[in-house]
Amino acid sequence: MALVRSGIRRRPVLALAVVVLVAVVLAVVAVVVWSGATLAGDPNALARLKIDAFGGKLVSASAVDSQGHSVPLTIAQGRLTPRTQVSPGERISVEVVLKRPGWLGWALGDTHRERLSVDAPVPQISDRWLTVPAGSQLPVHFAEPVTSVAYLSGGRLQRRQISPASASVSLPRTGASGSIQVAASIHSWERLTRPVTVTWFPPSRRPAAVASPRLGADTSPLGQIRLTLSKPLHEALGSQRPKLTPKVAGHWSEPDSHTLVFTPTGFGAGLGSHVQMQLPRAVAIDGKETRQLEWIVPPGSTTRLQQLLAEGGYLPVAWKPAVTTPETTWQEQLAAAVNAPEGDFSWRYGNVPPELKRLWKPGEPNEATRGAVMMFQDEHHLTVDGIAGPRVWHSLIADTLAGKRRDAGYSYVYVHRRVPQSLNLWHNGHKVLSSPGNTGVPAAPTQLGTFPVFEHIPVGTMSGTNPDGSKYHDPGIRWISYFNGGDAIHAFNRASFGTPQSLGCVELPLASAKKVWPYTPIGTLVTIEN
Image 1 (tube, one colour):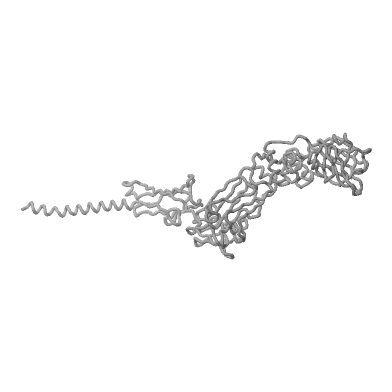
Image 2 (cartoon, one colour; image 1 turned 180 degrees about the vertical axis):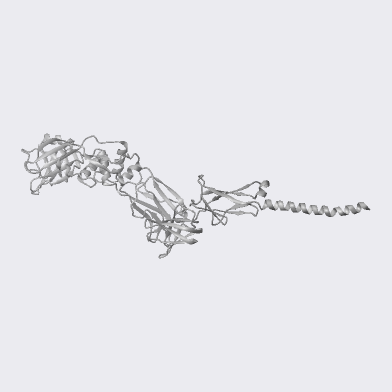
């Protein structure tokens, strides 16, 4: 009977011990569970730290960007915010260190670390192609609210703070259509995004377009032509590509669903040419519906034309650049053709006739330059008109890149019309010949001025009308160099020379004409003066 009573007394004690043990275990678990910290993202800060009841105290918080550079932080109410601006999309690694209470440190360790990698948010524009009625501002919508926007207006960067943050911003616009560069940031501790192009169009029946450069404006030989449409490309233009006239080497690309870009390659569009783009379907652009777009490639500068002609040996002057930066590619040469490099011209010869010196004007159109162009055209089997068109520039740049140079020297002819009349031939700094000659009679005088030789034949027939109305026809005329209409330097059989006897030509004795002729190819300047 005594054993039974003893067993009954032990059961409550055992139950109490179990309860105490469970309570102790639960307390330990609670301490362990509540001794940590949570590091997570935050809609307004870089990260947010939540420290549990027994988590201890924050010792340090640090952050580094993807390049390993330190990002200083401000901590307020558990929010970790950069003190310096970071780039949108930048991946930032955050680490916090906490010190546990001493009574807990012996079991779980003195410190606790939490780490988090965060990508700084990037504002996204919801729609980059907008149809905007006349008189309305440009409504730019973002996927989430932004605190700052920047845009180019009047060539200047304008920045606007948005408070409170908003997902919709109205910006000024100019014209019925156009494009604007927009950048934004979601937080004040973020830098602006890279600019994004937003294009607006007026309401129209057909898909609208914005061209860059604008229609009719200048474009460089290797400049891109960009066409942005209000509708996706396949909807606006179909599957075909536009065609360019004249044909230009290059390739098409689609940087986005609404934009078509042509990038010239090789020689690009010719200097001084008109580039036309024929679209497969009509679009609305600049207030009208059309399938044909056009741009102008400006001609090269007169200064650069003279520089290249001088380098090629077609002028009596030399050119030396101010800075030695050789243009070794087509791209560099084409850029220089439009914006001529600085430099100095100098006479190639010590003895230059004053008549020739008066003809030379650097940077300005003049007969010396026109004659040099004609000589270049003739030697390269081009149409001789004295105009530096696309084919002249192409051949001139090709010669420059290949190092080709004309070595025949430079000739100049000047004729004194005052009696005794004479012809003087100058070449490479020396007077080669001075011969008596005959100019036109008073009824058909030889015109004063300077003219380039435009036709050069060893023998031919000369015909025309005499002052009295009768006709003349003279075959077998030797050593002819036409320089002004029907006026030419040529041989003619006369009893004397040195007085007006011709019908506008400059007549020479046969021996003199034969000597002059090789020095007067097409482009050679002939000056008639009193």
